[in-house]
Amino acid sequence: MPGFSQANELKSWTELATHHKTLSKDIVLKEYFAKDPQRFEKFSRVFKNEADGGEILFDFSKNFLTEETLDLLVKLAEESGLEKLRNDMFAGEKINFTEGRAVYHVALRNTSNTKMEVDGKSVVDDVNAVLEHMKEFSEQVRSGEWKGYTGKKINTIVNIGIGGSDLGPVMVSEALKPYGDRNLKLHFVSNIDGTHIAEALKDSDPETTLFLVASKTFTTAETVTNANTAKTWFLKTAKDDSAIAKHFVALSTNESEVTKFGIDKKNMFPFSDWVGGRYSVWSAIGLSVCLYIGYENFYQFLAGAHAMDQHFLKTPLKENIPVIGGLLSVWYSDFFGAQTHLVAPFDQYMHRFPAYLQQLSMESNGKAITRDGKYVNYTTGPILFGEPATNAQHSFFQLLHQGTKLIPTDFILAAKSHNPVEGNKHQRMLASNFFAQSEALMLGKPDSEVKAEGAPEELIPHKTFLGNRPTTSILVDKMTPAALGALIAYYEHLTFTEGCVWNINSFDQWGVELGKKLAVKILGELDDGKAGEHDGSTSSLIEAFLARGKL
Ligand SMILES: O=P(O)(O)OC[C@H]1O[C@](O)(CO)[C@@H](O)[C@@H]1O
View 1 (cartoon, rainbow, N blue to C red):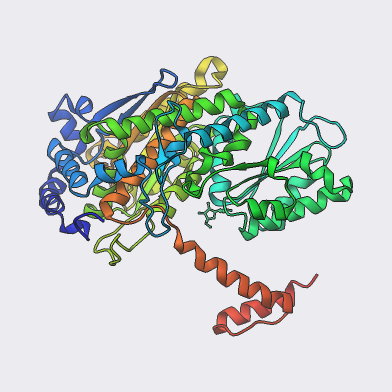
View 2: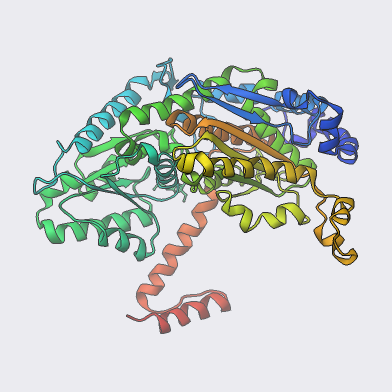
């Protein structure tokens, strides 16, 4: 445990509170830019991705930040023990103390084969053995050497998993679609709603479909139920249990449940309990991605994340890009009262990125108990939300520009499009929106300007924009596998930084357990056709469902 309980007991927290009193009255971003021609240079950082030679520019200069703010925030990180906690994570210490586990997803993308140990035992060979298996298997499937039970090539992959066993694979395979094998059809089935599996099966042929049952625990009700439904559907045609080996593989830590399900141990891609669900796309859980984009690209994805890991591990805090991102989030949440964090990728392929980040951020830092068991005296994890732009502009950006809430926003753009159609015209239009939005959010539109445009007197307040809305712009050269890997790792370490300062355990998820238990009890009542003991509303709703939902 660190040498403090509540983050607001730290000296730097008090100093930040005093600093906030003056800064919040004074800071007008456009004036700060006018006063300081070096502002962009001071508050932007370039990440050089050793994996593919690409760069990512992080522009933090349109944030409520001065040199003093940054110094105080860095001091807050130091006092909170960020360097120790980070080093402990990289050393395989059991920093997820409520579950007695190491937090070692960084070991899954250790492409430099650095020594990494848990309990004094190296994990490097085990990680590499699984990667080797993924390589061999993905090459066999992609080449057609791996055949279905009737000798046909696999052309459909159905990943069955939920939460971290779904969101990472679906987001990454969408984001890296330009690298995908278009002869392979991908389906991701997560929801217990029968529609999800039914639609995937309608679109599949048992002779050419490969099911990946992705579940760390292999006990998650949704996944086990969907996988059993898929197995029944498959056996209806295949008839013979021995055919399962060609069409079902498991991505899991739980060998006994996997074999009980009927999947051969040799068709299991294992990983360890030190991989959290929301950090598992780098593990065997990423097999769907590997099959789709090929092993070389998957490896580049890992290498890009590894490059960001090295940056996080070795760069002084003031230059450390994810540390700055995390500290800014704390700054907005706890000193400016921001409740949310918006992430808007200007990239259609990245359309599931905000959904992925929701689990990463909200399952990690949606906590209110400090590491020594006290209720926090301050606010913690923000509500993360987002949609790809420019679509987002035409729906909820109104509230960003003229609403009453402060919404710190990240905009992400790749300079080079994968589809430079119409002589790159679309890309230039996309980019012009990326620049215009952050500029407009900062500059606003004063009433004098609205008046000068000839607006009638009564409309002037409606057409005025206050501006001074903070944004972080992230400019990637091109969304390559390595760039995406680095970007995800950026958000992981940002989340880590927040959790460390707030002194919460970012690595458990007890909050989702309650709902699971209650649902099991009510399922028994639905099977019996009678509501049990509940409050008036719940019993009546159950009775209404039973009356209306009879088959
Ligand atoms: O991979 P599993 O064990 O099926 O769990 C799936 C998901 O369920 C959760 O435990 C929460 O419901 C997530 O943390 C996890 O990603």
